[in-house]
Image: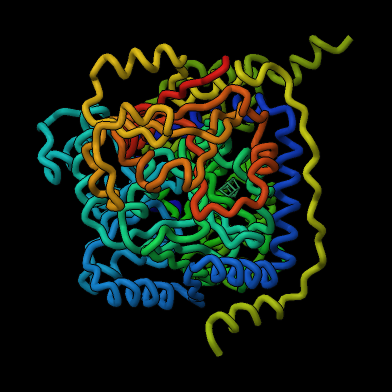
Length: 452
Length: 188
Ligand code: SF4
């Protein structure tokens, strides 16, 4: 199914889609406020981008350095060329340890590799321990956002599934109550797991250590109670030096949720006595992306989610409409590199407004790459591109008359148009797009007034 | 060919322009380090208390099982600590010493020696970190300068209690780990 069809489905529930839109915009707003409180914000973005440029230009060297140092610290290093090999390596470790149940903290890479179904098929119980991920796991869903996995759900949905799975009171939707129930449930899982899996936010070549950031503390609860820690890391997550963490950690949480840092930032350098750490370095299409000059910059992504929160299409169409592990603007440039046929509608799921590029902490030229993918798709699949273009022409993504009406008239009209019209499923342009937030006066009016 | 060699050879095959690493400049910090640090901890939903407040908290008897990893306060310890972190599951309060704090975000640096068992600051129901207010740096760059290439097997920044907003973005404190963080700031 293509993005427009999926998006239309998401928009069926008007109240929910409006809430989704507004909530993500609120997160975006928090990001704006906190970034403005750091005077050197733009310098930091430049530095992060330059460090990542250097990483991509020396990826092999840094990976070898990382491997050497990690091994010297008693970390077992594995390499996986693709998702299948990654999954086999993880299962192999579990089988060697005779482990039938694991806890796992947030890892977009293991989602990308579809590790959960693979392990379950092989008789291993997987418990996702991030609260949002546990919620979607109960519902047999995937996360719909890389930082806010359950952002597509309302507390009523969560209360219902908790009532079914955790026997919480029927109808009790209090977030404190529900979180506490999950705490008790997951505490038991933490205490009994012999192996814990985590993702990796940064791997440091210089020291062979890796860093994991959480607010819940779930990654640490898992690994410090288990005997074996398996960390799954995409090869692009490497950074040269420990000092570079200073740059990335100042950007990551501020960009992601508008907080100054996550409450836990854990640096794993070597295992505790008697325990084991394994790290799996995964390619799965990353070297292919590196070889595409126009798209290799997408590998700089630190998975903060800011481009999703700001994207007018993502906010109004929901994460599932992308049908890719990483949704939103960055997902729309990563996924076509993995499977062009399947994901060919994604680069068209954008207004090319450039807001994603503006907020990206590592300065990926996201909207330009979206445009480039459109060119590639048109070349590779002229018919497909034509039909996508038709859908756009038919108004799914466009706001034809809204932009054509004269500014003042539109501003007046928009204030009185009720949401039931702008969010109506009958209204083709409203399907994907609410009307833009209106400035009180147009730039033209402002300019007239302020120009002396 | 092993996957390792395959991946490395694929990378080598890509012609890439050289790109230099930038130098990280010293960013100026305006304002009072202590005030900023306290504000940051509060924003992260932690609390900052004085030593006197800390003692009266301990005397109040609200914490049944207490473990202090700091010698000075070891008289408050009333449980036996073993090598097995699972035994700490019903611990009500852990007291540890932070090496230094970061004013811009409230993060406090800890290494293996500061916590004994790595699970301690997570599994405990409540956490107290004792920190000397002389040991504050402005930002994360200064923090990593200070850490240098220290070789602790585990290093940790704690900036607040365990928290989540995964249910409709409502903030809830006490997801999996410590339900509260109190920072005892010495020499204020
Ligand atoms: S592309 Fe940039 S903004 Fe989007 S998730 Fe990655 S780092 Fe964040």
